[in-house]
Length: 195
Image 1: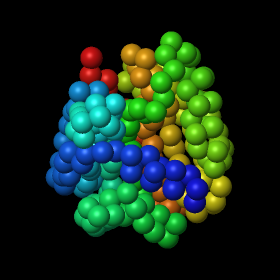
Image 2 (image 1 turned 90 degrees about the vertical axis):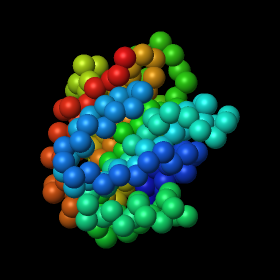
Image 3 (image 1 turned 180 degrees about the vertical axis):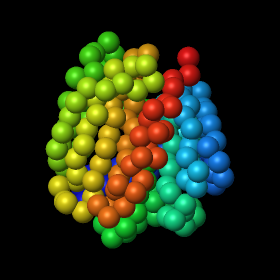
């Protein structure tokens, strides 16, 4: 529960909602930082939590929140955008987040340092497995776990690119986890950094 609340807090720090879209086909989502193909029937919103957006209230989107079509109503209430996406995740639901970690400001450090930072930032993440992977031609660490409850499962890829940290997350209720995991893995497979 506390990990989910921490992810809600991270989303609440995003200062500007850039767009919300319903995806009808395998649409390529591209921003200044990264791109990937969004699977059919996933809805998404783009946010900015860059230093620029903190200073002036707008900035380039560096965080994408995605939900499967059947949970799209959780994105509609703009007054509760921080909580609505995660609402009832313990009963049903799934979401994904592709984000540049604007809080991580350590430069020229190895990926293992970011992995430790992330684990410390989310102490309620219960790690079941951790292994090396690749994302967008960069070395990554894939974490599988839960939020100290058995009802919510997570897959998180942590990666560094051009001295910036990224976390690519999939969070789902145990009943929906396997249903949407292949879509998330397809997004990871097609993920590219925009240089």
